[in-house]
Image 1 (cartoon, rainbow, N blue to C red):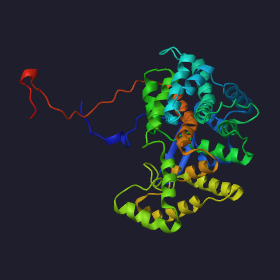
Image 2: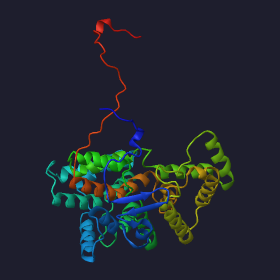
Image 3: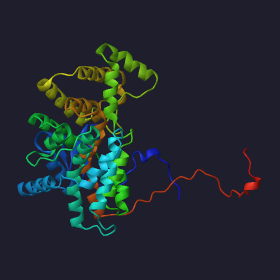
Image 4: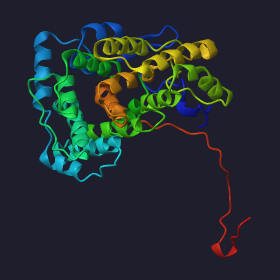
Length: 381
């Protein structure tokens, strides 16, 4: 069987889904039909995750029960803490997180091939609850500190920031981080979500599914772009250097970090919200010179390449927000995973409802009928 080869499967539908919708020309992102700006304004991360995973906005009792379940599962086994303690201090946080997610499957085994509804719910709760704890635990331990115990009096976002920094965050900071998590929670069939779908289609256990997705996110072409944006802004250094920097990179056909998106041909709606959050954050807690440089980068890029549909994406302003919140750059992608696990789980749930194992074909480019040559007769050409 042969067919047209499409590099990266760009534009090729791989599944049918009603979880999220993107209109790249109009700059629209919806979760279950609800515009992202409405959720950012009125919802919470856990409520948004419930919407994504269980396909409806929860009534009050459902939401309270779900929040209580997540809160009660934040702690991790002491053996997982011991495992984290043995990781090298210089190890990559995303690799540490991937190892920890995989290890969860040993403590909460699910019989592969017989995944039942109660398994999906229990696994969903554990993964939503424990990823933030594992990220914060690794960070504290690599600093030589004992990990902090989750606080039951703090919400999902505030508790993570507390465990990460050792300080209870200002309520406004916790809310801004909450919105960041919502903005990163889901975005149709991206590379990591596709990994989750492929792995889930084999009826692998949920911890393996999420481990697969996290491994895909760790690649620099998927996660980590906001870290590169921050490095770029620091390299530019001043507003006066923005235009020559951008012109030089364009002349050498090099990418401008955080500018352009495979889907959006206008400014990413998440970038618009994140920019507003950055402004709010700087107004209340002190300005950042890097923000002024970022605004100038956006202005110059719009002038020079805006006609090509290249505008700021979600990564362009998120690093500025995380930097102000005191999150180290190498934790930006693990934070992405803490949010995107909601989307991965939503697609896993949807996949199980009408599952078929993925088995794509290929376009063969090799030879045929090649005769075997004995080793004694072989030589370099």
